[in-house]
Image 1 (tube, rainbow, N blue to C red):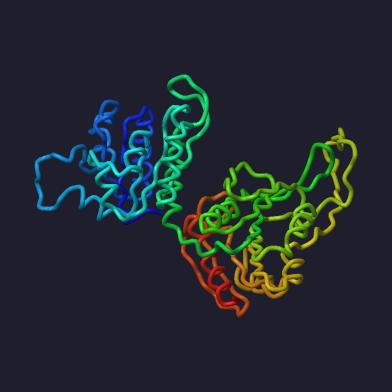
Image 2: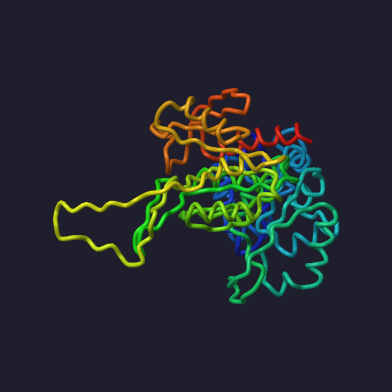
Length: 402
């Protein structure tokens, strides 16, 4: 996600310095090239060698190091960075930048930079709520600097309140989102995910192997790209994106009814869920008891569930409706049939018998067929990458419509 990006991490003197090492590790795993600038105060908490080892780059600590190359260090660092992240950002450093003080390497680099600067504030709750600190934050925000709000919790000093630095995972997500195009910022997208369950009696139900990973990846990436997302989810063990409105349902009928209430206001419906095609004709009020005879059979009469994709494919006006086809044979023929019968704008098909493309996997191998029956084949990708392929196609289609 961050391959080829140069990130300057400014580390200032707070107890949350220990989290900064985790931030470096996470940024590196995303492919970023990370260089660390430490203030003198930060060095009292962590040795620069820690960051040098993790970043695989020299750590910058002073404006007055002996010049080993012809470039001026603070200018070169400012010019070659794609983003400057200050984490933890103390009240002292925030105050210096807000008032134009550049008395160390980090504040000088920030002053010389024209790139985005993001502060992850971390300090005692009374310091954070001090009017002078809040004035400095407001002043910097008005100047275009960005802040990742601290969390609320028990602080190292023993006080409880706001001031705890955001978690490294959230900070890295913020950095990633800074580089994501916001091409869906005017779109309201409804995404379905996961399986549905159909009850048989008070203790039993029928379902399928869908994990919901594809739908949740779509929701996460759509949020990053600026969309307003409503995630209609069957039962899963996944954590939805914070910025998405998540509506939890159980049955196929509940999923259809939920979408019915919001469909007219949406721009796009992505039907990535795997709702049950059939349900029990009768739901027993009491638990079905097992008979004593070994050869006794349980017969359940099944009736069709409504076809959600077809229902909204027929109902759409100017919306884009995207369907999914999980097939085990005749992938193209079956997917084309679904595309036509359900009146979809395009369908995302995959052969669940292929390794890396079945239910529960973190990857997928998809074929996309549009309403002109143009076929696009894709090799195995992470489901987030698949999500962005789908969203790219939606973005292009919305531009054509407008």
